Image 1 (cartoon, rainbow over the protein chains, first blue to last red):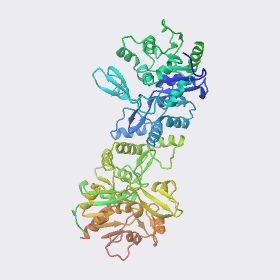
Image 2 (image 1 turned 180 degrees about the vertical axis):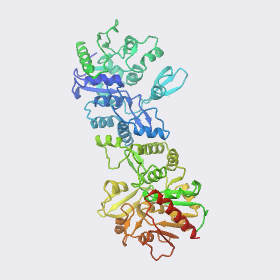
Image 3 (image 1 turned 90 degrees about the horizontal axis):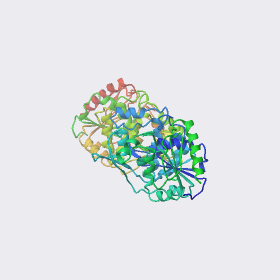
Image 4 (image 1 turned 60 degrees about the vertical axis):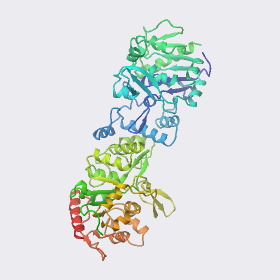
Length: 309
Length: 309
């Protein structure tokens, strides 16, 4: 349903998939018309530094620093600090690049001084020439924990990166107070359109959706999602396997729509993935790894959303 | 005066001068016979990291990582993190190298976990293959402040590095509780010989000497100092100028001995710098920039100290 300002768009985003859609949107919308609410459930401490993988992926993408194909990190970054850490026996399963480190150092120092994550994110974006507002979903930690079939509880990045998503998932838990920031609630309250990016619903979107007030805001605003699945395969990451493990369905665009039941006013899927649904479906190329495809798809998506009235 | 174990040596050390003498001593003494008490008055926070310049200079020297001529930092270190920090407008007056950063990251994370500086220093030394005990003079911060003639109060590294020691010094202040660690008091209590390294007496040695119990321990132990002055010139750093500003004397080996009045049982000076003194003087080459000269001088110094009975 539509409320808020029709021209204002809010994107709910996780990592690489979210970054790619947002990268298209920023070429079509002025900074004041777009707010990007970013998952912080992946955030963790490493080497004593606060790492925010999803915020950084989107920030580096908008700063045109992220490698087009891989999607995360800084293109051409070096690893001299990491190599020295390895020589000294420090943990190196999370590969922090030399240029990337400046982000984590800046953020950690600012948080230690009492700045909010929202504030230091704005500072970091500014220092990289990114003029769009990236809003961490909350200022307090809300760590995602993967509970495995064996009963282990793994912080998300350890499960994903260190264990290469090998352990079967039994449940996904969202920790912390779960309080969204005032900026997040303001953005949602003032939005004419909410876009759910093609991110992993369990670990990128659910951490945002399960915060008090967010789901309610979406039911009062036109909401359109983009499928993170093409055919039976996730565009990126371990999502297809997670759907098999966490739901009774086979991985599909439809399964993800089912996960968002009651929220969607429209849905974008890849050609061949359309299905009978109580809302309109946009069937078009949603593979937007290449930079040139991102703006084309973002344009189609905004046009589709406008057509929903 | 002599007490403690005659075979046990304690060195009081600051930065590069201290590192060079200690580098000679470690080739002549087994690890159990040497304790190195290190000034932490230079320590400061930069980029949210705890930097301990004197501990690191000695550690890198003993690990054979420090460049022989410059004396501090890691030989051949790169500056990719610093270059990125500069691009983003972060302060870069203190040049942190990429490999060097691992030290500060490890230390900062350990301190945040509640480890003592003494403990994490041991861990850092071990990770670099340094088997001698480097003892920070205290576990609590004891920051040195330079009070200038103009009345400004500058943290030591800002005065030395950022302002290039340009402001005239009116007073040197030692902050913090000034409590030495138990390890420092044990080392002093068990020493047969205390060596005051050729370090700056005002900013490298005084921070140690002015801690409760240290001066008393030295008056009960054979104590030998090495002059940091040759002729009228400091071997390194701003010491000569500081002597002119802080004392009524001209810079000289004798002026430094006067600063240690009541503590010395012997003194090593460069040829031509001997003077009438109430204790024996060793007159020999004290210029030990080159690695090969360090062990020669350390041998002469230990022999001289033994001869003092």
